[in-house]
Length: 260
Image (cartoon, rainbow, N blue to C red; front, side):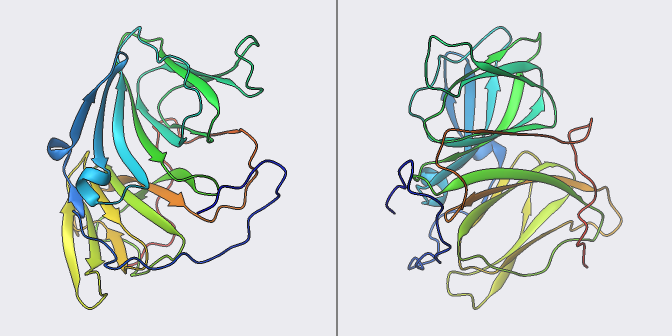
């Protein structure tokens, strides 16, 4: 995939080629099977990544910033989607790229989603007395690849229908409640069901039929966060911040297109 340079305009939709096989790694990765990285600011548990899914274009994991700790300003990094699960802090971004200028500051709290585009200089600081925990999707591919999240709720026994994508890979991260995924084999000939434990994630590759659902007909709702990396995004190449605040409890309304 060739990167698009500033001034080259928008990117047309082009279906991506199929991989053979469509996938070869794990589909479900419980939190206890994640790969733990230690950092000066805290830790990062990689759930969906090259080591677990054999897909080297994105990483989905849970990042923790300890109280009083901050990252050093990140230069020339990949694009990231950051969804705060708990804690308080601030994200600082230098939209003009000048480290001497005053950065834009975004207060971080539960339910806030921030997308930091590729090569945007930024830093995160935990300003609270408890850990700042966030679900993070890192896109390792160049623009026009683009990550984002959206959270939703599946009521008991509800879910979406079997579908596939030709322009994105996805992750299904269960925050709480009973969550499951149905996914076809790499040849799309047989569909299997997997339970995704809370704080675990499921991988959804391209060109493979899948669906997410709440497998308990009479249980509690499933609160989940849908992670995407869209490889044919049409947005601007200029450094950007995208900020969206979900409900006060960090959740969005019930999945509107619920089906049995």
